[in-house]
Amino acid sequence: MFSARGAGVQMVPAKAISFLMDAEHFLVLTHINPDGDGLGSAMAMKWLIEQLGKKAEIVIDSEPPDMFAFFTNYEWVKQYGLETDSLEPFNTVITVDAPNIERLGDAAKLIADDANILCIDHHVSAKNFADVNYIDGASAATAQMIYYLATELKLDITPETAEYLYTGIVIDTGRFRFSNTTPEVLHTAGELVKAGADPDKISRHLYYNNTLETTQALGKLLETVELHFNGKVATAYFTNDYISGDHWKNVDTEGFVNHALSIHGVEVAMLLREVTTGITRASLRAKGSFDVNKLAQIFGGGGHAKAAGLTINEPLEKAKKMLLEETERAMNAG
Ligand SMILES: [Mn+2]
Image (cartoon, rainbow, N blue to C red; front, top):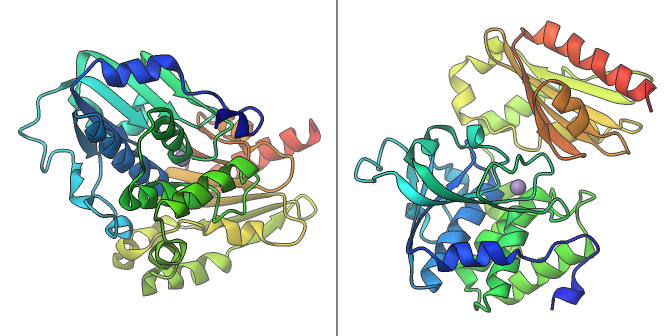
């Protein structure tokens, strides 16, 4: 089985397996504003732990996104502070899809001071913050790594769990379009479909389910697209004014940046949002050889070579200028 894996993909570390064997009750955490990979991986992890005859709780910092409400047993996901009062801090914690403790938000308050932590993540920027780190930058999604873990443990993946994991992979490969769509990812996805994941059903829930406000916000964003550096870099933005409007709570900007990246000749696309006055967040995407993870790191952010994010404590215009200056410098450095 493991010989079929693509080059560079790691074996599941024996320490990760013994971590699961050595405790009975686990807290499973993922990053704030979790996406399909964070939530899908957390759901699959709880399933996996229960298959071992043990218990797990999933807690997230924010409200569980409606987008994933089609997951069977979605009520497993608890929001910190709302349904977690009865929980004592845990001694055994598993984090999925989160490269550092800060990304866990307030849910990290449920980690006991002397807790043992297992980190499972595919972000190359992951910080080795845990006691056991299963970090594999060659995997396209954390969900792919959980699949390996389940396979290593010889568990029969149920249709529900196949759905969680397939969702994580679809999201993190941009519907099997990004360069992380390796033969091994497609093989894993194929195995998950065999196990009962329904690609048509999942894609309807994920991609044909927009609110009117989301579609209108995309229109607004596309009007702001500008090209820089001979058309190699595209920027687009949302002002704080627009983000402060009532409609914003129904807007999901997932995938918006790809519209700027789709322009002929564009190698790097940046979506900027002044999320509160004087604080600008940027999502970066690349389709050539440019490494947006390195660029994001200059500003204390990170992610992957082709997809990264960062925050600049400046208003939109200033942040955009700073980001473009560093981009130009990086492009000139080759
Ligand atoms: Mn991920």
